[in-house]
Length: 364
View 1 (tube, rainbow, N blue to C red):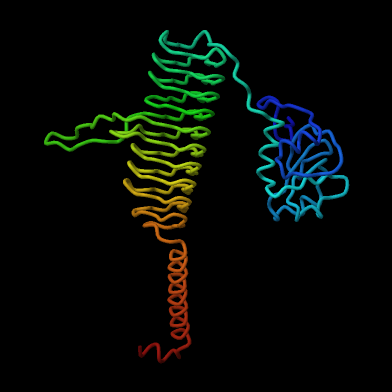
View 2 (cartoon, one colour):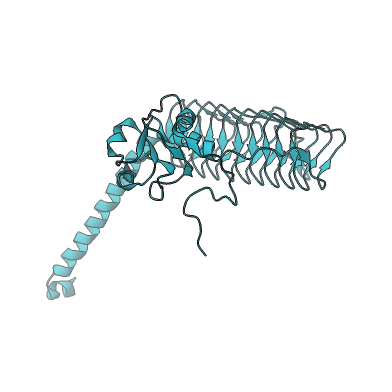
């Protein structure tokens, strides 16, 4: 069986077009410029592109692929325009990857909501559902919930009592959200969990006593929460996720955590309760942040780092316990040199022993 070589398999992805060069330039952004005219039917990687598709280059490692591409048009940085082959239109922009994201969305826009409530869905009479929203099969919308315009609630998703969804939110299949207020264009990927109780308990003479978690989750506009990720509601304060933040799959965010605008949290990271992250903070995969810490604006936490102290703004830390990146690499290099010297010393000693005369070795 043969499979389509280009992205956007029509079985899974809606497609618009074809689009002329003017529409592509408008989608790419204000700084995009090109000469000529062409009708483009879709997008494709450089290696698979054809005369009726558009591609892009944002990494010099693929320069050879650019030189050999058969694409009808290519989004490139002006410095790379000279390498675009004859017959291919160079669309020059200083941010090719950003332009590519916009152009790809032009050809493959998100599917719109199909207004209506599926007959198998359970919607409480006290819920408010905008007529333009879509409620999928076996979804549950509890009393007092508000579903905004053009929202899409996927199959088996649960929107808890009192939850508010702003316009154009998407709740993926099997996801659940409770005790939360969401802004516009928030996307909870399948299996994600928002608003469950945080991990809080007191120790008594007979064992553990659960502390009531009485806060909420407040999520700003344009936030995405990856598949099977979790955001706990606050204990006595609110858990806050700033606008524009992107959270990868399998991330845990504890109660009372506050994330600033446009943070990036990569897969399998964990942020303990009451930690505060500023704007544009990046947290690498499998990193862990201890509770009650402050991470400054623009800080970068390396993958697998264990952060146990506050991190200043714009700092970059690595390791466990986390330390400034330069210090981490210096210590790593020093340790490697020490190991190499020790190995060389042992090898030299072994060689010297091997070269002794047999009689000397016997005497030893």
